[in-house]
Image (cartoon, rainbow, N blue to C red; front, side, top):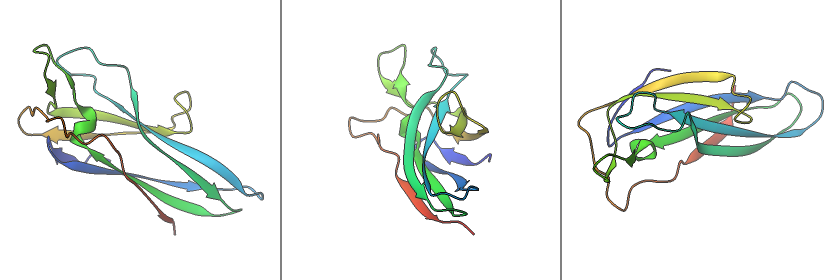
Length: 130
């Protein structure tokens, strides 16, 4: 994964979850973001989205998170919300301590100051995987 999106755009982050066992189960898939080169110190990572899925034996699902650039916004030194261009880290797993999948995407364009109606949700699409 190394997609590019505008500082007012959206990027899709997809993973496939498979139940390799013989018993049905439930999994929570968590999406974390990080911004190591922001103009102010940011958290090491933050929870941006999650999905709870039920999987039968041998079943697989494709989970796609639609991450708007506003989910990377933060309060800058001028005390205004801002979305900065640059690389955003992505980690996916079952908990903050178990994140086996890593990647990144790049935001391109000017620094943007989102309004009060900024996008705070991360829609999730879940479909059967091949």
